Image (cartoon, rainbow, N blue to C red):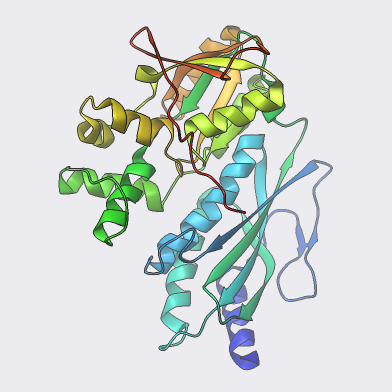
Length: 340
C-alpha cells in the first residue's frame, strides 16, 4: 500500500495542493504553515463513513463536493471566511484501483473549493479493511467576533435561508429505490432530479453569512440535523423558547409539488428532515430591512418563520408549533439522531 499511498498523495498535491491565501508552506511537508493575517481562527471537522453517512455507490465527484460543503457550512454558520482544509482518506481495496475514482473526486472537490476560495493544505491517506471514510478539517478566519448558538435574544425573529426539506425528501426517495425503509413520493423526473441535486450538492451560504454577521446578526447555526432539532440547539444554548409557524417554512417548487398540502410530509421533510445546510439565524426585527437587502443582492431568499420567546421553566416544550394559527403537537422525532 505504501507506494500506492504515496502516489495518491502526490496526485492530490498536484491536483488540489495549489497555494492559497495565507499559505506559507502547503502540502508536501510534515505540516502546513499558515498565516492568519492577524485574524481569529475558526475550525470545524466532520467525519463521513460509507454506509452510514453516504451510499457506497455515490459518485466520487458528488461525495467530494458534499464532504467539503458540510464543513464549509459550519464555517458559514460562524460568519467565517474559509481559507484552508485538511483531508484524511481511509480507503478500502478497490478492484480497479483508485485512478478514475480519484480523478472524479478531485473534480468535485475542486469545483466547490474554487467557488469558496479554499485551499487543501494537508491531510493523510491510509488503507482500511473497513468502509471508505473521509475526515475533513476546515479552517477559516474572522476579523471580529463570530455568530453563536447561545446569542439569541427575546423578540428576535427566526430566519432561514433558501428552502428546507429537499434533501430529506430526496433521501427518502433514494432509500425506497434501494429497498430500504423510507417514505415514497410521487413526483416528476424533473422534480426528483432537483431534489437529488440539493441532497448531493448543498451550497454553503458563506457570502450571506459573513454579510449578516457584519450587519449585526449574533446568533446562527447551519441546518444539518433538521430545522426543529437545530433550532432546539439554539434554544437550549440561549436558555429561551420559540414560536414557529409551520406554514411559513420555505419550500422549493419541486418539494411543494411533492407535499401538495400533506401535513405529515410537511412535518417529515422541511420541519424535521436534515441535510439542508441552510442557515438558521436569529435577529432583532430592526435588522429586517438590511437583511432583506443583503439577501436580495445575493439572489438568496430568506424567510422569517417564527420568533424567540422568554424562557418558561414549566413549559413542557421549548417550541410552540402552529399551523394556520392553531397549535400543533410537536412530532415525536425532532430530526436526525446521532448514534455516537
